Amino acid sequence: MDQNDRPTVEQSLCGLSDAIMKATEDLQACRMTIDQARADIVSRSNSISRDVVRDAEKVVAHLRETDESLQEVLKDLSER
Image (cartoon, rainbow, N blue to C red; front, top):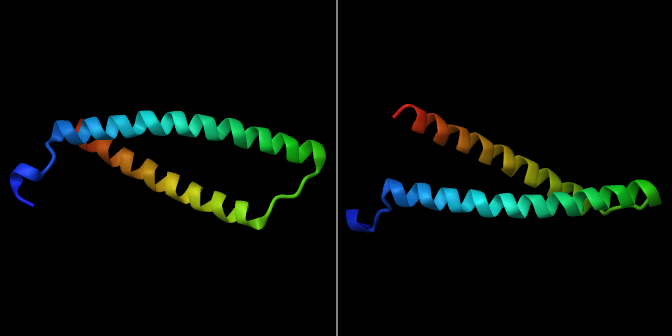
């Protein structure tokens, strides 16, 4: 990859901003679904497979990593 193929800072920040906007929408939709499922579980004493627990733990770990990475970007931007 030569220098002309590398994204500029503006392109990178634009891509990050777009990804955050999309993720915000997706996370909000997921949160509403999860909250509804939690209410259903409590009211009906439903059981959920262990796969949900495993997958939820993976998501939490990925979101923590994402949060840490975003904090690094914000720190880098504030130091400019």
